[in-house]
Image (cartoon, rainbow, N blue to C red):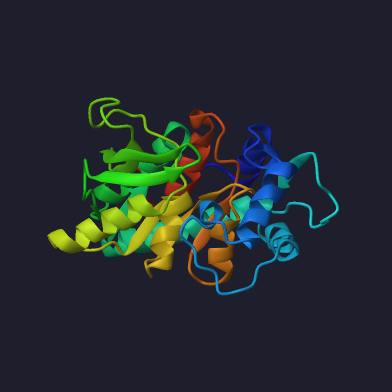
Length: 271
């Protein structure tokens, strides 16, 4: 099993934690938009607290390790690798618990180019452990408002992981898709699961709107988030999201492989 020390060294070397590529300006902009209740940044969360920008800076300092100084407005963000490891431990514990029960799970990502391999390995391991990995609404159309206007995407699954792609982009099952923060895909998938009677997930695993959208609907949800995604951490603070792992969610896909091994080993799901 990858030791905690080796994992910590990898997190810093790969810039998954430590000094990350996300800028302070990007993060502060997200906090301002969240405080203004901009749906592009809420990504499915309906917060009960007031959550002004200073509150969000303090929350992110507590949960991620970014600077808690509101006067610091530029430079690169910092994620405390020890917080990342602690959250990975909690994440793995939730995986182990659902695997032990052979529970029904749903996995989805808004970062298919970076994180698909991570989630696909989890889906494979959970399926091998007897879990049902849901794949409802494949090919279903989802209309999402973007900065370029209303765009139509299609739901697809790659190795048990849901994502959205441009219509006619590639044949179903190809390992590509679009970057999305929207909670609409997970709402569509959950509605389809309820309609077809295949069962609803006991756990939703993913990022962005997949986690926030599911958590807000009352499903247990765990996932990964960068410092400019405050919605997941607010959801965790308010009890809507179960576990959030702070890390850079846009580094090279192979840099997540040690995290995959660490999580699967801790969850007793290594194959």
